[in-house]
Length: 298
Image 1 (spheres, one colour):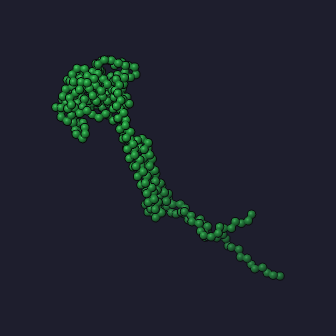
Image 2 (cartoon, one colour):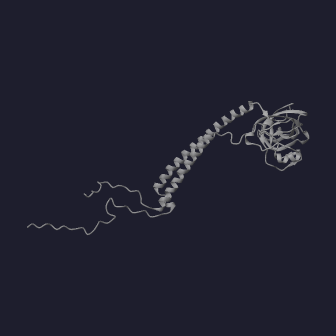
């Protein structure tokens, strides 16, 4: 009879930490500063900052394109507006009615009589880098006509007219006498200022001017382009009013905002990774070299 060698059974399962395939221990939580200073996080920071810098440059380029394309479009629009014939004021705006935003820089024609006694100066207005005065004169509108919305404008309404700009108040002169055919661009009334004092007013505000000139009054004013009869050449005519938001291409502006948002998201992503790193948890698992464990049959 042949005796079989004794087989020694293992005392128990191997320790959980032994073997290449055993789970690795979790990291201990740490501070945000220590987590941020780990080499892996510093490398990610440099990478994401590079991406954010590229996004910032692309956003700046899109902003430049927005300005270039916007100014080109604005110049074409101003040229078309200057070449367009004026429309009667009565077709666009009636006295004491709200001034609509689309009326800014609308080219209109109106006939009336200047009231020289009511002429005012608006100080501290800059033209071509020089501070001077706007010459503001009330024009009593003649005739009647159908206004926008079907209302009727009667004669005698007051239209504030900026006849031009002067560096010296002595150059303001007097407006043409008698009936005047005026052509100009509409602009919205400004907010109230300090009122009329000493022949000057700080703001072109219909709410203040109606107390000085009487009413009814228009809620906007006219930036003069030409008049018949002609006025004194000492007055410098102003450029057409600018439309709010003009000069920028909206599409390129949206692209610039998107690139800047992407750049900010890259920095935010790194911060969230640092926060997760500081909280601890399983580190990245590394697969050990060697064959996978055998799968028992069945």
